[in-house]
Length: 559
Image (cartoon, rainbow, N blue to C red; front, side, top):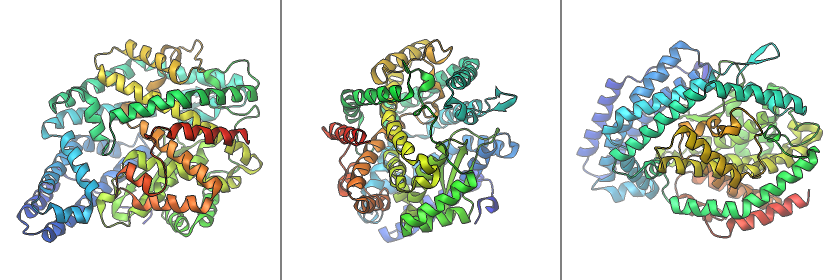
């Protein structure tokens, strides 16, 4: 079914609660593991229906944040989602403590029960008011960012539509664009500080009520960190500082020389060539058309997937003034349908949607065929391997999108992906600092960010910018507000994607088979175990980063 034709009906809480209560009661009364699993399949159906309706409302709100009807629906779900989470928790408690757990574990896997344990550690009914407040605050931040109105040459643009000017080949245009971009953030700085202050205090109070010292432990549980901990992440970041940061700085120095600049400034951060970054040669419709051709040639599985996406109009990618900023893939379980949301703006990022977000969507399409719903519950570091690796697998066809600048794109993509890892680790360390010291003032947070910039991005110079030079850069990163502790998952995944890049350079077909296996494993295994099963080295393993850097240096020296 095409997305526009999918019917929507509000999930009424009272009615839904009765359905949950009936399932919980029947599960409790069941006299065998087989009977309990039959009840569990009813739970699947209920979850699918609820998830589909809430996701339709979420997407339609993001497509037009000024739509009054779906704006009200979003606010309604902000209110009831914590209550629904509590009902789910009650059910999971029954399942976790079932006398027939061995049978159920055999059916849905040990990972599912470990995740239930983490859920039980991360939520309680007493947190509902705080969760409701947290949802309202993140929605307020999203609306604030989506509502940016920047005057540009007689037009009014949002943040996403400013992107082509922020990466213009004309440095004076970039300077002017960044001044206006920064001025928007400066104009809402007090509101940004107020929202984040309230979020940090809210999440800290949630942690205290659950018996934790601070939000870090609770945040890890909520991210379903089921096979690694803070100590392992600390060790990973240490390796990044030791090996990756010096490599990235050498890479930035190469970029500086290529751009013919005496010094790199923050306005040069997203620019790779004097004649400008490679841009797609086609319009949005042509990008989708060439994407279909690429996936038809890539494999039978990707051919089927992309045809499904196009035929059912499961994309909303055109940038519009009232559309939420950013991009994502989500899933409509009743239809087995991934959905891709993005903001095309005429830059190479448009093609990244067809590679990165389609990597997510391809895996979601495969996982949607698995009858065991828990296998869809992939942790984010695994999910981002699917997307970031697809970016590299797609490079074989990148000429379809960039014509005679295909090689420029490959160089830019490799450098951009490598430059991201230090930044991503900086975001992660910043969040640890904030939640371990929740009484930090806005000024102290900005100072902490600037200190981390010196460690992870010593080349970065914000000059005299009114907002960014004072340590406010992090406030444009919506993950920090909306999804605490998510960002390190991108870094872990990028490290694995680089391994796939090296593997496909040696044997593309072998790399693809490994990738396809990882996609199909979904969440049936623990992250570190699945990496080993498909022939990848865990990013947490000592030596992994050093070896990755050696391969990247060899790759870049050969270009």
